[in-house]
Image 1 (cartoon, rainbow, N blue to C red):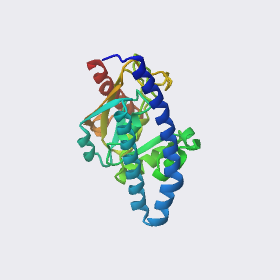
Image 2: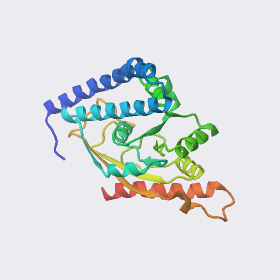
Image 3: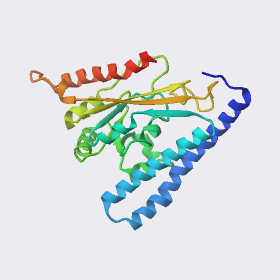
Image 4: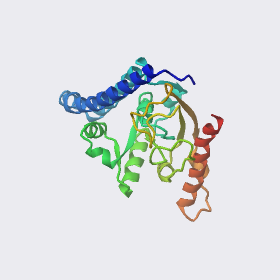
Amino acid sequence: MIRTGPINRLWRWLATGIFFIFFGLGGLILSLLWFTLLGVVVKDAKRLHCLTLHTIKNSFRLFLNLLRAVGVMDYRIEGAELFTQDKGCLVVANHPSLLDYVLLASCMPRCDCIVKQALTKNIFLRGVIKAAGYLVNSGSESLLQSCEQRLRAGGTILIFPEGTRSIPGKEITLQRGAANIALRAGCDIRIVHISCQPPMLTKQGKWYRIPMSKPQFVITVKSKVVTQDFMVASDVSPALAARRLTRHLHSALIVKNNEK
């Protein structure tokens, strides 16, 4: 890890601020102009949804490549081709940075995301969330039903089972939501590990606290977990299988941390 001088840090600080504004305005423009235009021109609902997700994917890819080009950060994705096998699959990843969703959605053929309910009130993002048909985490039974329907229809749902960004140096804690969704839908789970050194845009770190060196993201697409392997006929409750599966997901996500 190479420490950079004050001029480089000042540039990365300035560029990070500019790109935060660019990201918000980009979401607003897509919502008010491009998605509205698509809705007028494209009448087939399925095709409209595909074009909307394709637009978001390419917009994220452009955003990340611009961040890389100006030297704010760099990233590497290992095994992205495995995502082509994930139709009707739940994708589970750890969550060290604010950029995690952007990084994954930029390389997945399709990404149905579960978003926090608070984001539906964000003026810059709510239009994108609505147009993309993202699932809103309302904490209700209806979310499980919606996830099951989306997966059985061939969607690929991305979820961060920690529920929020992790804290550097602290062991991750998983909620059982991902396991419950997978067990209910009877789908497999793709494991993805994300690392960022030095940490950037963490839960506790403000955007303007620029690391001493340029952050390097590494996204590793790992093997699938067969959900049915965690179901036992003698279980008196589905919660037992969910606990077993959650423990396995926890182990799968922290192994890479230990290797690093």
